[in-house]
Image 1: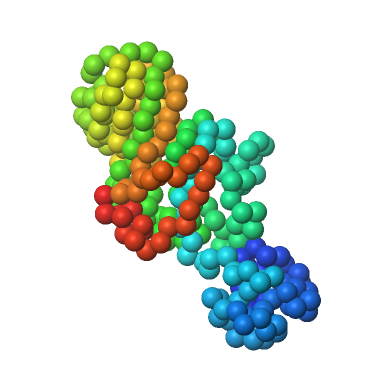
Image 2 (image 1 turned 90 degrees about the horizontal axis):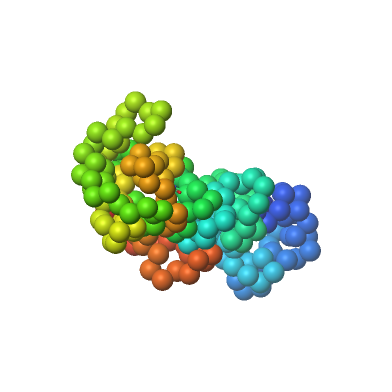
Length: 233
Ligand code: URA
């Protein structure tokens, strides 16, 4: 790919704007030599205003989503993209959330610009565990663990029963739930099916990855090791 298109695709500006940046001498190599539009592309050697380029396509990020943020590129209100560098929203291929967390759910959210990887993670075949902690409005009844594990629970308006899920009771009104699929508002609807109501919901883990001390609102790029851990659950 050509230098100008590559830099534009990373969200630094339109091709016209990148051409202007080149003319202004803002785009150099690591040695500080000004680059031209037809110079060969060597991603790691390019600097914009002296700074290395953002990561190339194939990006996978983990975000500790706080409550109050929406997994959307254009809803009203606060968006998960507001927590990332502004250029990340302008990338091509686009950086998408891997599935969604509700606005009022906190915890581990993955984002990637790699469509194949995204499908591999969310594919029902992958059966990657997703681990949530829910606090509830009412005491657990006592039969939820067996019901959720049964593989027979059908959510309101759905015909296919849920896959078996694991419930660990933490106290009377708190439980850890491991799901192997991802249906719309699944955790909230599962507890609603037992006459309860989820007050707070936090995702601790996806596959073999947890937040590992990442504070709310912070993100980090996942390297090859982390990718391997994701699928090693
Ligand atoms: N289940 C829910 O109900 N909400 C989420 O955000 C994730 C899973």
